[in-house]
Amino acid sequence: MKARYKRVLLKLSGEALAGERGYGIDADVASHIAAEIKEIHDEGVQVGIVIGGGNIFRGVAGAAAGVNRTVGDTVGMLATVINSLLFRESLEAVGVPAIVLTALRIDKAGEYYIPEHAMEYMVGGRVVIIAAGTGNPFFTTDTAAALRCAETRCDVLLKATKVDGIYDCDPMTNPAAEKIDALTHREALKRGIRVMDATAFSLCMENGIPIVVFELAAKGNLRKCVEGLPVGSTVSKEA
Image (cartoon, rainbow, N blue to C red; front, side, top):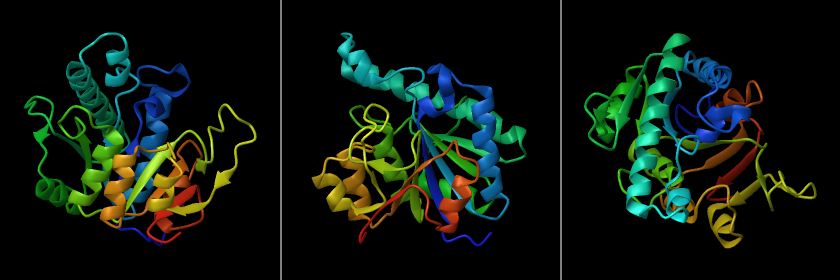
């Protein structure tokens, strides 16, 4: 494998881990994702991961149900810690050394996140799972992924989704949705592309970070992303 990107930040949603069930973690799905990561890790690619918590709890949904937003987001951050710990086990099971770093101080769950330490672990061959979002309420895990990508000097942000890229509307509900193969960060913001929130797009734009949005369920897609092959959709400084 000839890698175009040497250090990558993979953003996984909690729903991706849940599979068809829509909640919790599907062991088969987690094993598949771990195997995809092993393929690029074994080729020397340095990997950081940010995982969402939507398969357990969403702060926004909690707020809609009457939960204080700050409390709801804190619970959501804790949900990402749960996902991170369990997914670390999936990685270890396929022979990939991994460590959980957390933006909240939870000594029994993982080390406190410091960018320099995260980079040292990646250089040393460990997959680094960064949990608890940004450590602050009112920020999504997409924004956390963009922030961690910039802090750890990753070459690209790989956004794993259930569909094969970016569309002009939701392809899950509109069969007439048209795929967008490439666009700039500014175009994504102007068009209101919802695959990531505006803050995440802005962070990537300001730091010159390319984004590849791709379908993780398709075997080999992660490797193709790392090789720079045409897969999914790309958001970059110049489309």
